[in-house]
Length: 348
Image (cartoon, rainbow, N blue to C red):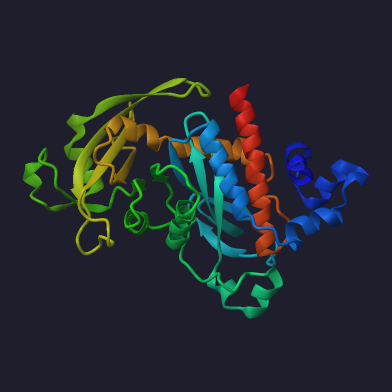
């Protein structure tokens, strides 16, 4: 396919013009533009086929949910808006999307995308029409966007029921946890150290169900920490030692979403010579060992690495068109190009 070949081979920004220039008279810019922005092919079967292929050749350990910020200079690309980006600590004119990645310690590849659309776009009939936002697309907050992006791959994609790992400060983790837990998903979600929880573990009988912050709970079980060795052959040092402790907890009844209250575990993860804990995670996988949970918690780092080294290289944020369908077709084929690179790197 010319478009994917262009994403893999074109130098610089992967605009349709640059991709077409790579092939000379073989394919025109107009044809490529129509293929992405003006055609009607459905991107969902392509994503599903990609996900199914990946589970066969490089089985993922988890589905990792990650936001993607796409800076824009103008106001006409679908979903663009001025928004504060916590990870950068600044306001950007940008699109925001949620990606679901098939991730393992060997490779990570995006398999699904959902574009977060502000109300200003959805309530303006003229703006909707100009970028061809379908009638069935309705307003949703960022938490709901995350949940639906993950839920879409669970509907009829015939994928393994793997844990979902979520690590970001851009949406409410407890809300996301509750909504996904209600769907029966095994979860590992990073939460803030100030999140209040009730300890139900007998290792801390003195707590008596009193609400404590995650930081306070982890401070009380500091002596229970155990080392976890994580090997990452593509990085220096190739082996790192983390510290982990886990405690049974429950969400406060007044804030527990339906489907997520009791039967939870709080995981603290730390690093040697750094303040304890460096991160805290909430999970409903109470029978999984802390060591295995720690290894799952490292997968978002692998996704971040592959996003920077592969996704950006194949132009996943380079779509210069304006339409809703064009954006989805572009990121779908960019995900396929990412898979080509990731699998080649793994084989080599």
